[in-house]
Length: 404
Image 1 (spheres, rainbow, N blue to C red):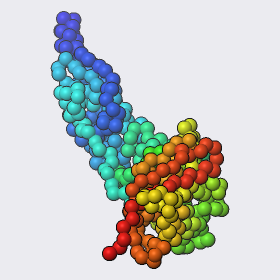
Image 2 (cartoon, one colour):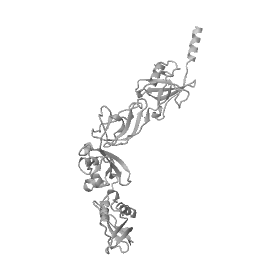
Image 3 (cartoon, rainbow, N blue to C red):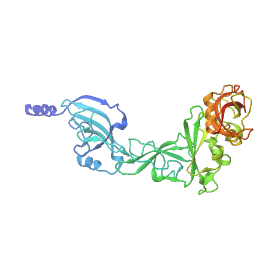
Image 4 (cartoon, rainbow, N blue to C red):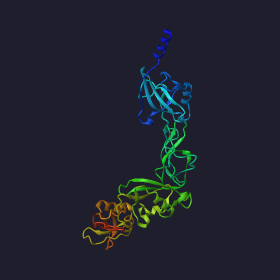
C-alpha cells in the first residue's frame, strides 16, 4: 500500500500546473499562425493532467506543408505553466482543428510548434482599374477577405447587387499558399458593396468611360462611376458616347454619392458637367468630371458669369475681341467657376475665369485699326442675386498699350 501511495504522488508531481491563462486581445489579423510539425495539438497544454491528443505531430506537419489557406490557424488564448512553458490555443481557419499547442517561452511572440503567418502577399493592381463586372456572382462572389485568408472570412451582403453593376479595383493580393489573385473592388452603383473577389471572376468591357464626382466646394473627388459602352453606348466597341442624356445620364444622376446632389440644375443638371462638350462625346478610357454639392449644406450657385471688357482708363469704353468674348461666354457657364448666390465674387475668382478663357492678357484691334495689348488690372460687380438661375455680370478693366 505504501508503494502504491508513493507512485501516485510521484505521478501527480510530474504534471505541470497552469499559472496564467488569458484571451489574446491584439488585432486578430496579427494572430494568424502556421504549425511547423514539431509539436502536436492537445485538448489542453500537453504537460497537463488529462491532456488528450487532437492532432499528431505528423498531422500538424502535413498541415504546415498544405497548399490550402484553410489550414492556417488563428491563435486566440495563451497559458503559461509553472515550468515556464507557454501554450497557445489555436483553431484552423476551416474550424476542423482546435486545441492547445506548445508555443515556446513567450506570451507575446509565437514559438515552439507555431510561427506567425502572412496569409496573403501584396500584388500589383491592374493597369485599368475601372469598368469591371462580375461574370457569375454564384460562382465568384465578394468576400470581406480573400477566401480562407482570415479565420471566419465571410461573403458580404449582395442583396443590392445588380448584374449590370460595375466595379472599381483599389487593391490586389495573392493568397500565399495557393498563389491565386484577388482584387479588392467597390460597386460603383452601390458603394456599400465592397470586398475581395477572385480576379478571374471579373470581366471588363473593352470600352468604357469614368465619371468623377467632384465636390464643388472642395474640388476633391467624392466618388467615381464607370459606364461600360456595352450598356451605355451605341455599341461595346464605340469610340465615344454621349453622357448628357439618355440611360447614361440617368445612371450618372443615380450614381451621385450619398449626401450629395448635382451642383447645377440647369438643363436637368447636365450643366453640372465640368465640360459639357467633352461629356457629349466622351471617349473610351477618358474621365469626365461631374460637379456635386453637399445635400445637407447645399447652396444655390450662379448659373453663369458674363463679362464686359473695358478700358481701365475711363471704365466705359468697351474692348472688342470676338474670340475672347466667345471663350468667356463658354467658360463663364462652367460649374466650377460659379459662386454662391448672395455673395460677392473675388478678384481671384475673376482672374481664374479670365485665365481659363485666355482673357487675362490678349491683343485686339482698336477703332483706329491699330493693334493693342489688353492686360487685366481690376474689376467691379454687384453681389450675386438670390434664388434660381442667377446670372452675374462682371466689369473687367484692362490697361491698354499699343503693339510696337
